[in-house]
Image 1: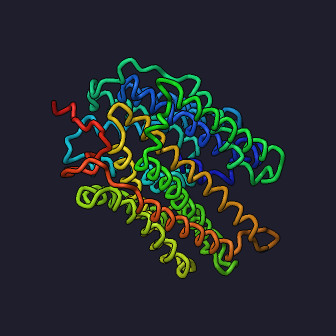
Image 2: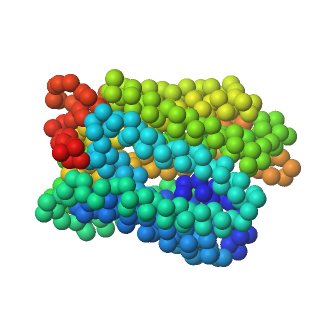
Image 3: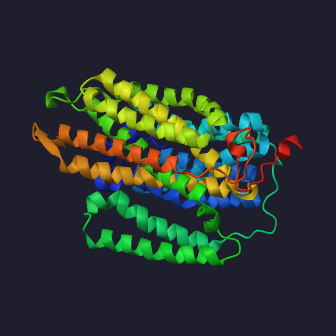
Amino acid sequence: MQTLVTPLISELPQLLHTTASNASWVITATLLSAAVFVPISGRLGDLLGKRTMLIASCVPLLLGSVLCALSSSVVPMIAGRALQGMGMGLVPIGISLLRDVLPPERLGSAIALVSASMGIGGGLGLPIAAGVADYASWRVLFWATAALTLVIVVMIRTVVPAQTTRPAAGGRFDFVGAAGLSIGLVCLLLPVSKGGDWGWGSTRTLGLFTAAAAVLLLWGRWELRVADPLVDLRVTARPRVLLTNAASVLVGFGMYAQALVMPQLLQLPKATGYGLGQSMLAMGLWMAPGGLMMMFVSPLGGRLSAVRGPKFTLVAGALAIAAGYGLALPLMGSTWGVLLAAVVSNGGVGLAYGAMPALIMSAVPLSATASANSFNTLMRSLGTSVSAAVVGVVLSQMTTTLGGHTLPSESGFRVGLVIGCGVALIAAAVAAVIPAPPAAGPRSTPAAEGDGADTRNPAAA
């Protein structure tokens, strides 16, 4: 879903008979919808059961895919992409489900692989989407996702146990908290995503940022006072959880910055002196090994966490992301250099993405794993959104002209790479000060180390 429309970005205005500004909402709608519904679906997973919410999350994903496949104008396409964003809760709920159904010795590697699937899917989805868009109708992309969603539903009903852990007894859904967080996130992420078009100093942008600050402060006050909050801020404020979420924002930034810079470097014409002149499909193929590296590294990261702890794995992953940027700076003039940098950086993403949920689940009660993982996923998404805005500003301000066209300059790309490297190093520093769990004793898996967390395995009972 994240990279499905990337090959179509330049063609969307013609395909949907609209302006480029309106067409950009096809991407923004998914971002906003996912940010709003991921924490909501996580809390509902704790209240109603994770298997139930996995299937429920597939419903808007299916409807959105069909609506997009049938769309010929921008409004239904935006609506369909918003519905697809509602299904993003599948991943954090699925991660929390692992704690319920797997034996401890398999938990670490499974968490790492499923968590990294967010990056793996994006890395492999780009070349697949580019190939389909080049050689078939773009509508095939959405029909294929609709078919895959049906397969997912069948697999969930067939494989996932109907009863895992019991839903939270007597818990109530916090409708006021859900509304407050939704409004606050929209007010925050909308100007982050569209500030480049509206102007960062415009009344609309500054007004929305001000509204976001006010609404989120009121939301936080409400969450601290209500008996059954949407997000338990007291748990979130535990140093182990708080610092992991802070590192997640920074890792999300570092992950997405290279995903913005490297594809553009590959596609810009060689006449610029720094572009590599690759087609959309070729660019996707050059970037695909990065997704494969994530798939390869993720289980290894789970084993590393079992031996050294997920904190060590998170630090190592952030440093690997920074190393990838460091390699890109001298090697950005070569396709093989970009490939190497992407492989190293994405290997770090695989390590980091696998470690973060293990750290979160080791510090929260069993009854709050879905909502805590969903909030962590939201933090990663916040990092990617800020990354898109910051790198977008850099590349739009540092430009050059070729054949009457304004293009990002070589200096702009280098600044973007330096920013990504710096943020990844800060992520490593934050991860390095994540405190160890207060309870002493042996650790059989990274997810078993906890701040008093219930780590029973109901499936084995």
